[in-house]
Image (cartoon, rainbow, N blue to C red; front, side, top):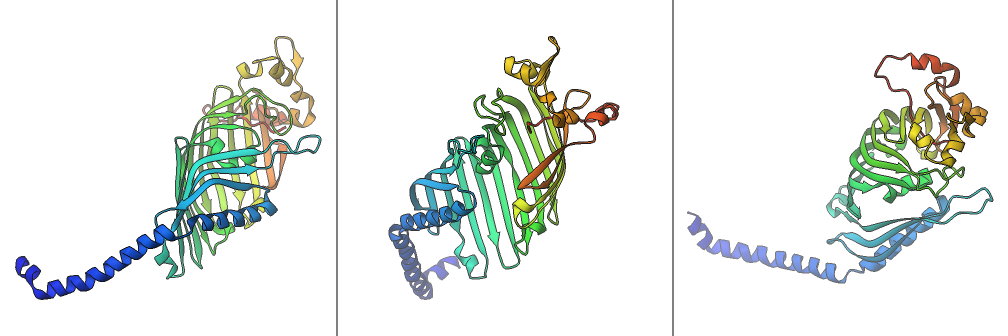
Length: 355
């Protein structure tokens, strides 16, 4: 039966009718791929992005080369995100911070555009780390899905700019978010990240322009957050390392302009005794029980009020994300006694450097 169908004259005619359009369509795709000016399109995209970022953050993107990614995408090699340096006490900007990726690429699904939606698949890599994701946008909502695999923390521009000092370690996890009406304030979704071998600082960069502490080993940091109707609830954000233990609990109420989002968080942290006595600098900051010298940090009344009975610190972090306020939490100072009487197994001491 099959042999008769294949030997039928109608089969031959149909194959010719289907073969010619298919051949010309494939030839057109090859022609487009070989002749399309991907380099000029990439340069235009970078120029447009830099013009927008210059007004908002002063950040700029530099690339070594641009080429096509399949048919409807762009690929970049040698990507550098350059951020302006933090201003010192003299008001002068410090050295620029550079985050470098080996490659980045993005491609558009053209058929989606016919139905009024935009779908962009993107990927990037730096060293052994990779990031993959999808951005989807329509008139009614936006969606973002991102997966990280052994991605170096220092290669994430937002983290590097926010912390302001070297942050070492690797991150693995994912985030899935949906923005109804394309608004950040209506976000829904989940965020799950595990960061390994987290180290804060390099012994040279000053933390919050205060002092250059020796590197602080925070070990494994776990972040689990649920986003409901624009409210980010930190289900788990904690770390327990050789030098530092800390935890953050609370929530962030998102606004369409992220720097206007409102935080209501409690930050608790504690430095290990071995770190406090690591060298003369740390002894001067935290004090030395052996010599009964009071540390410089404890001379600050605000920090002293945040100190807990077990030697940690507790802070209430509130206000807009663009201008956070740190105040001694009720569990600090006078409230430390009640905190020390919590049931065994409860976690109430952790760390952050907030001077």
